[in-house]
Image 1 (tube, rainbow, N blue to C red):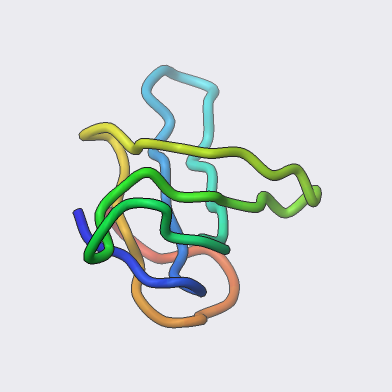
Image 2: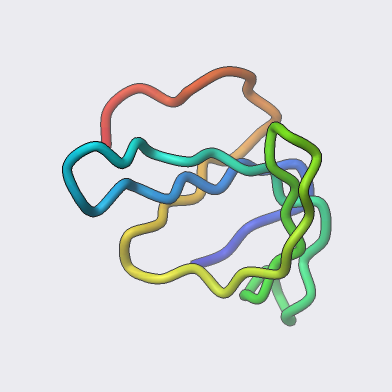
Length: 69
């Protein structure tokens, strides 16, 4: 998984009733675009994430929810 600052990270909900979460990557801590990433959610909360297999990087500064999986 490779990402750049400004990309979106989509974490798919894994159980019924849990929706996908979309966060913005504000810092790439790993080397050459690799995790971990400092991310910011829509509510302003920041965290450091090492995404798992249920996550997808959406490149670019697109706004809104990504379509499809």
